[in-house]
Length: 131
Image 1 (tube, rainbow, N blue to C red):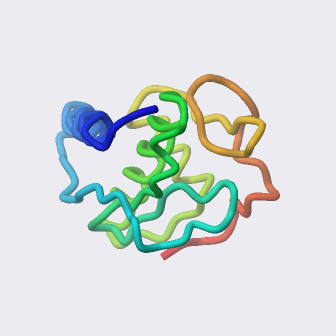
Image 2 (image 1 turned 90 degrees about the vertical axis):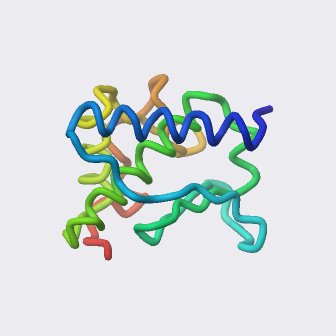
Image 3 (image 1 turned 120 degrees about the horizontal axis):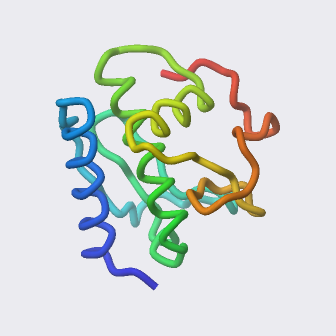
């Protein structure tokens, strides 16, 4: 199990990777969201473009899931900072490009960097434009 401090460390580390790879560090913060219910099994994180909200249940995830979830949400922030509409699959592709890893989906259909199904399964609604 990970602590809030661990999660913040990984988040800040990933933002440094973004800055190093594209020369731009998005202005966003990470909040462990104790108020939202995150009712679905695979609901772990979301963003409004300025804040990445994560469910407390993310602290029970494995590190490859945590990293992939944060990478995916940071990619959303990058698109949103440019006011660019995008799909979930495009978000994964941007995350892969920025971080130099592949985004997979595990047996629970949660993002991971440790292998699984790739690209994002169609049943997860990969094609709709977002934001």
